[in-house]
Image (cartoon, rainbow, N blue to C red; front, side):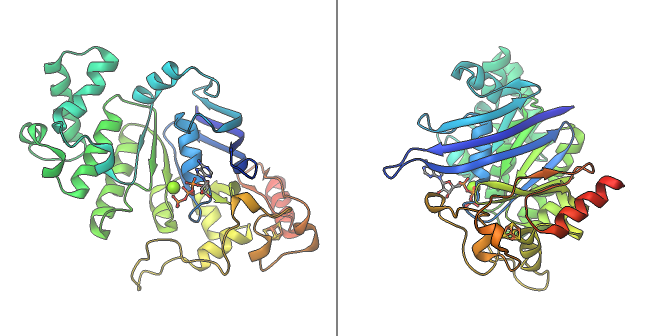
Length: 330
Ligand SMILES: Nc1ncnc2c1ncn2[C@@H]1O[C@H](COP(=O)(O)OP(=O)(O)OP(=O)(O)O)[C@@H](O)[C@H]1O
Ligand code: SF4
Ligand SMILES: [Mg+2]
């Protein structure tokens, strides 16, 4: 069952020099019980995609295309409908748990708020559910922990609390935007393992935003690679990472962090930098950095073509077309 279907999504922000297009022609599919890794360099549009899905873009943003959740179109829905969906059926975990938690409210009350508000549970029943949820995210001694405040939790424990808050309403879709970037490496691994366990246990559709291809390889069924506001390649993780078709995916893989070296904060860059969204090149946005660039790339934007094996790629290279045709022929 398709939990999230994004089709031809475009997001523009008004600016003094004219609208800035930050997402263009973005299409994604995420099924129930499936995890999709969304990767790309800083500024490629990962968070904008997440915020558009959650209805959290600024009111001034101009949005076109379609975002369907369980078949229901979200674009154009009144605020109240989106608020209800956000609290219950689709939820999001952000990078920094401290900015999302209320420092003046106990963890128990922050967790209990969701079932009290959305399901009308009594305070006692909601707190009992909050305790069960802390167990589910492997926080020991729930009874004591419920009475404590955010500052009494370590960074990793706070992120577990955020995951508990996101899941207490039993949503079908969870979006996690760089959920471990602010944590140290050992804690990162524990949180990712927890997310993967919860995703399987609860048959969640998980959209995991990360700049780390190793995380995608370990935790995701499918991957979508973004560049300059577009999806340039997507498909099953094993196939895309072992045999990338798009030169950008190939570049990311070639420059990925090695296990025998310290892990950098951001993806090590391919030579050059992504374009400023206000000054996007006319053709393929990757052309100025692409080792395979051809004359057509400078004038024509490659469309994202989907093959029959669930892979999609946006590139003018003939060999990419041949690979797609081969896949089509079985
Ligand atoms: N309100 C806005 N007005 C103009 N441009 C914006 C606005 N919000 C975001 N952008 C631009 O949209 C682009 C995509 O931003 P986004 O936050 O989605 O990137 P990202 O892929 O999540 O990057 P990171 O890995 O750094 O989190 C960036 O160039 C950003 O500057
Ligand atoms: S379309 Fe051209 S510039 Fe863009 S990735 Fe393909 S070969 Fe490179
Ligand atoms: Mg981001």
